[in-house]
Image (cartoon, rainbow, N blue to C red):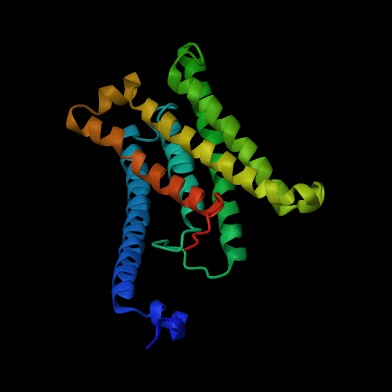
Length: 238
């Protein structure tokens, strides 16, 4: 067939192009699926292990790591990953239901965060220890502030009549950006908690290093999901 008479379909269904393209596509999909499933497992596992280590009910302080790991470690992760198309246990096809479930997780996150904060304040008041003297506590305050700011952006998205219609598209980007910053702060705060006297006295040796590395994986998955969804994509032209 002459070159000028070949249609675009002849190139599109070329055996070589199809082979390389499909292999790369399926590999990418399965890697994303495995990564999302692993992020779910790690988040649930960290919450369960933290609950076992803290022995809730033994003291006022024991409820602090339980509430914080439930809210920031589990609910926040699940509230973001439910929008992932690969490996999410929430199989709602309707985005409306995904948004509602997202708000449920975020509301539970705020309740758990406020409860955990109250327990640590009460515990330090009883023991007469100073407040906000460690990096972990200062990071925790910053994380709470970023989470509240992200929630405020979300409220405006649910009730768009409260703001100008022109700023609504940008608000989605602001909401996602605040969520990403808040999640990164959560990861750093969780990792900093492993340098506290309580955690180092409870977990030692190789297990301590494993605990230190585990929060990084869900953070990478969440960061990839948010940036892939909201960053502008370049149009590739031949």
